[in-house]
Length: 360
Image (cartoon, rainbow, N blue to C red; front, side, top):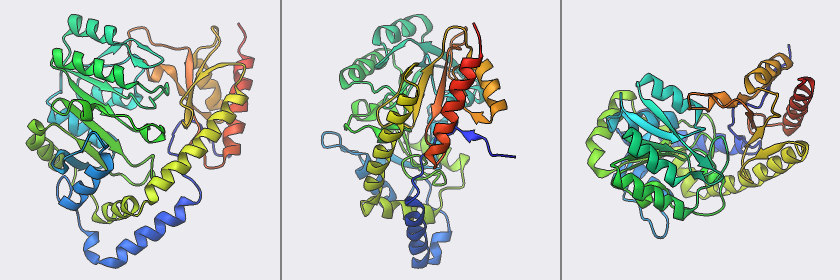
């Protein structure tokens, strides 16, 4: 039975990086058997110093004491929510938000309130209104190469969001899963509001899916809670993976790899848009996913069922919807789940075929 074409999961892995990653892992393992043990909770001082340098910008220098090493992006999101005491609380999200964050919120009995977005992200006036009506406790946001829409929020709007968050005592949690694909260096919300912001940077997408390591920035007031939560929710990180990651960063290889992933993402995005030129699509120019708006008579859940039968995996828009009336008029197509781009092209052609077969 043929393998389904994966346009659902989105971990871009370039063919040439497999050998390089293996060589670094083998080199690190040869250094000392001690690498088979676990790292200290939150990471060693070396790990946190390298992380702080990686996450700093010329106008925003990160203190290593504000960095904590997690076991992947989802884990760091959990840690932020638990350390901030947001179980059973209310969190504002973009009206189309990361589907797995919806699942995490459900596990912690968190109520999600949708905030209106445009092509630049959350609309500040909408956030202001949501705060006035619902009195939320936090904001979860993906402002840079958003998942699923692909937009990038400009700095002025980020500052507006910070002002509203401060006025309403909101905790901000930023997930930066795809921000590495943006060419411009933009301040994250921790840079702009370190006293009330958590920031998650994971390496499964910029480096490799199996590298379940993440950097978490957290306000100093939550330091003890973050360390306690890290200790309680994992058995700490692998020294081998952390050592390999440090080498990847310090050698400059990760920067080079990210530049190559941007180039490949641009190629895939442009080719996919060309194949879908008769449809309304949006996505970041370097992104490995795009958002396809469906014809009015086509529902995303119905199309998803047909595509499963045709051997293609995508994500229907209902998976990202937060409002009481689920948005059901689009699909997300991932371009990074298949290393062979010809498989992606084949999947897109099947999507077009299935849409054409659904009659008004």
